[in-house]
Length: 180
Image 1: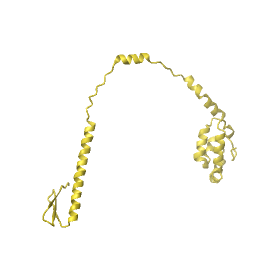
Image 2: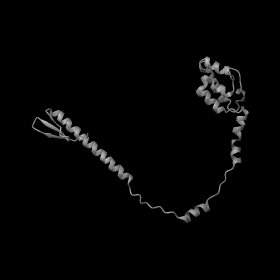
Image 3: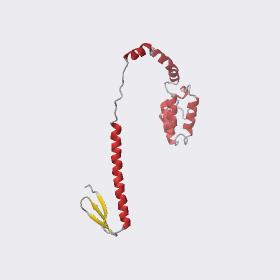
Image 4: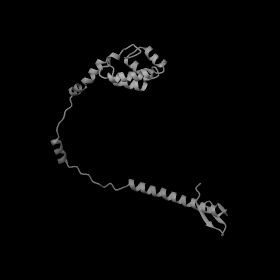
């Protein structure tokens, strides 16, 4: 139930707080009365702020959109007439991708970037070695030695993979615990 508050002075030392539903409270403390007056002012200001926000919001969305747009067909036709025709060729795309394919085929179809990222994020579990095609025991060795001799092996593997970026075929299907 919504209550509207009105405050009035009864006598010099007694104040009255009246709600809209006819509840009346008499207050004898002057400081408490001043606090209640401030609370009432804050409620009024809050309501005014809400109303002002609604009015501004409604007015912002109901602006007059009377701007007229005209389309000049002659200008559009001139634009199309002066445009240069371009064609896309699949041959050019394949020629650009050929060096990347050569690196992938030289390394046994394994991408060095993926191997490096796996080594960086999951090297302690030997996931990069599984990606490169090592045996299961190598991965178990990484896990049992607390991430490959406390993280030293994945760090060395990362450096070796980064240095040998162009050809990682020596590390593909490598069964040794030490990849290098």
